[in-house]
Length: 394
Figure 1 (cartoon, rainbow, N blue to C red):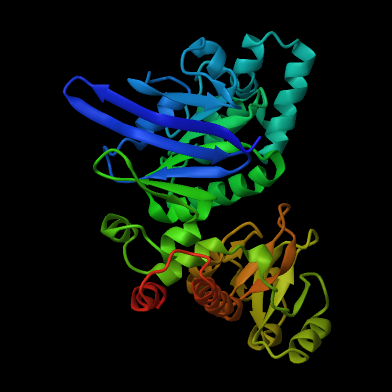
Figure 2: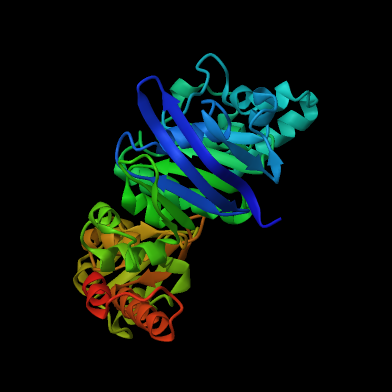
């Protein structure tokens, strides 16, 4: 099957108002498609029509090649996971009970539900023993959002709808949730429609992006790279804003670049060994790791020479930490706040993998420029004036 979802001339009119105008779209299986655009453009209405929380005025919706426009709406919704900005957890129910909502409706037995709840908590990075019996009020906003994702995945739906799922949390938590969700998508491989008002989030999260305009229709539907390099019209250009080169850094993941070797040592190693490792390197700081190989401190030669005392209390704390699923844009943002000008890369358990500095970022920018010029030269994209492309990639 080529496409998981197909929208055919989907239209919604409220009394005295056109909300969505003849939207047609083929959404490939296993991809994240992001709906983005200004307020009131119809992106959330389109999302809600897919699972018929809002009934279309006209047009058709196909799910796995089945026209679901007029089938039982409750049965349709059980095939689709749904995550919203406000999370929507039931406050009087435990985390386990919240996640189990749809499986209970489907008649799963208690053992199967319990196993699925624990599996999903582990999948979203939460220890089942610690969290299954808690209540939503006992969790942070980011943890509740993870539970919301787990609940949407509970019945293993082929499709997920996400309406600004990370919009209600602070920027740092939001970035972590984005990266965790991209890691999760690599494992679960769902077809996802994702609404956001943030173009940077759309570029980072989407395999494809649908930009809605003030006319309540789609102005451009394409890959992030194509939209950045070849916006369809003036509206899309204005919506994307300036800084196309920096936005393209959302298109590359840390895992795709070679990490920089950096001198590292265990925090419990003797001072002479630490001093020797730092002197054998070309760096001004040594990275100290704890027993789980998690980065904890940066120490300089001066820190190593200062009297007695625990090395774990010396130097500077490691603050700029990212995971392989982070984008190079995230890495660059961390580098700006880093004590030593680089970001430390760790795996899911927080163990040290290497560092990323400015060199691979600049290499990625130049590579993206070269790829764009090559594709234009061989005519694999629509022809556009050379000066327009150059201006967008500078």
